[in-house]
Image (tube, rainbow, N blue to C red):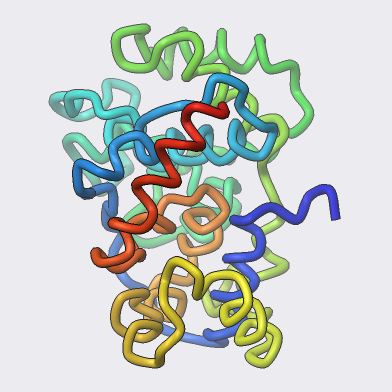
Amino acid sequence: MRNLTVSAIAMAAMLGVASSGAIADDDDDYEHDDEAQYFVHGAPSNPAHAWILAAGGRIYDNWWEALDREEPEGTHPAYPAAGAQEGTTTWRCKECHGWDYMGVDGVYRSGSHYTGIPGINGAIGMDEATIASTLRSAPHGYTEEMINDEELARLAAFVSRGQVDMSAYINLETRVIIAGDIDHGRAIFQTVCAACHGSTVDVWIGAMQMDRPMSEPKQWPHRTRSSTRSLMLIPEWRWSTYAPLESKLREMS
């Protein structure tokens, strides 16, 4: 039970709803109202282990969006000529190392996101200070203006301690979700998730965009575990209830 975080519960619910689907283009989902600024970009004064790993996962996904920074300009100087991408997106960790953390050995072994670069799964359990130092130096070259030391420590923690075996949830050849129990997912959603997301079918299907796990199977597990979409999928009318609670939690943290 120690590792059963809110994000893990959410992923279980999402996988319970979707069992297969097509591939969609990667996108960004960090737009939010002012009331959600602290949740998206803030940090508790006494962060839990689970929060650190989730925050590091968001940085891995898209560091400038997660940290509310200016977008980097141009294509990353270390992005390989074999790659098909260009511009800002090449500065994202996931763009070379993949949503499954396996790089050239995973989902990105071919297709428009192929780079030939290895994954980060070889860094599981590695000293986090060493990981942070690697990210500061070439070929990564993330400066303190881009990601400060405290934020970089979260990313290093995620790389060392936050990865999971995505092949348990996704067929890396077909990119189809292979795990999930609809009844189990329904039970989790109705007893946990619905408190914020609503419990009616219309809210469930509309506000939560339940087609996402099926249309984006390769990225959904990572983004759910990192709470990337938890906020964006809360109906706007729920924020009037959540905002006072958030304020109180900030005082307690």
